[in-house]
Amino acid sequence: MGLNTSPIFGGDGFITTKLSAIANWARKNSLWPMPFGTACCAIEMMGVFASRFDLSRFGAEVARFSPRQADLMIVSGTITYKMASVCRRIYDQMPEPKWVIAMGSCTCGGGPFDSYAVVQGIDEFLPVDVYVGGCPPRPEALIDAVMKIQKKIEMQGAPVL
Amino acid sequence: MRNNRISSVTLLKATILSLWLTMKNLFRRPVTVQYPATRRPIPERWRGGTFALTTDKETGEENCIGCKLCERICPSNVITVEMEKHSGRGWAKSFILDLQACIQCELCVQVCPTDAIVMVYGMETPVTRREDLILNKEKLMANEKLYPAAWARGLKLQQLHEPERGTEEKRGVVGK
Image 1 (cartoon, each protein chain N blue to C red):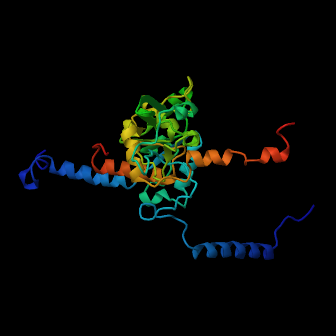
Image 2 (image 1 turned 90 degrees about the vertical axis):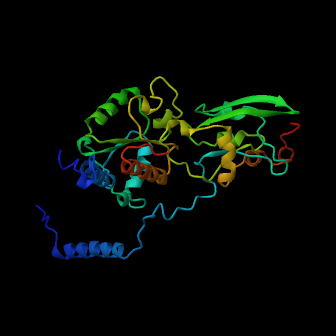
Image 3 (image 1 turned 180 degrees about the vertical axis):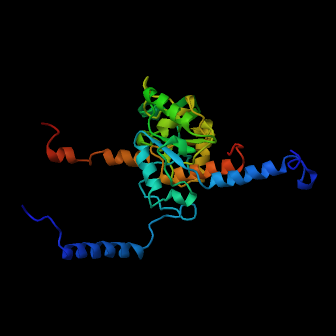
């Protein structure tokens, strides 16, 4: 590309990097979550979407139950091995780029269910970006997690600590 | 056959009533908590934050004697304590609390005979690495200074469970 590497625009890939920054700004402010609620953490997640905590202040209020239209997967609730394949398939159906929040103790590390039926942490089969501990976590913690995802998108995928 | 049509008076009444409700909500104070700017007050007996290991206020020694009661009662088996004995009492050589699977049931606080482990009012923050949810002894000791301790303490809760002194004689249970 002549224009992209032209020294007038600052040399290597100026336009593409600026374009991706603009795209990331847009992605950051319109995260559409796919609520994968299987247990009681989902109740707290509904509370976050509702008016008291109002996740729409962060542009993430459009809960899409179709994975094709979502880019943030909030896995809230115990994931059993039977559910794991469904969860993975829904994740695979989401278009890139996509992010995952593991909400609650059950998704982070199995919770109290140390049994043969329950997945001990969903990062056994999903790439998790943010872990929210708690049983269930407060709505504020989930808002914090969404803010952390936004920061991660802003920093172009660099790890946020 | 009965006439099922609704009279226009009923319809008008219903319309005015619903519009009145809309009007009331329009001028009500918004319920939204603007979270990062304002925070909800935490209730006094709330449990659900992180944990801390306490130290003695006077001597500065840590309170934990490594008795492993919390390890035994924990329903998710997230606490691991190693005990060592020197200078006349037990000490926790290592104390690992794994918040990955902790369900904040506060049972470890309830059984602690020395008020060593307490919950704190500090909010549990989301992390990007799973290792960060594992609290070792250093992190737990640091939490004591970072956050205010919660209401519940081991000895306080155990006293609540104890029957009042002398009640058994009064009831006539003893010596029957």
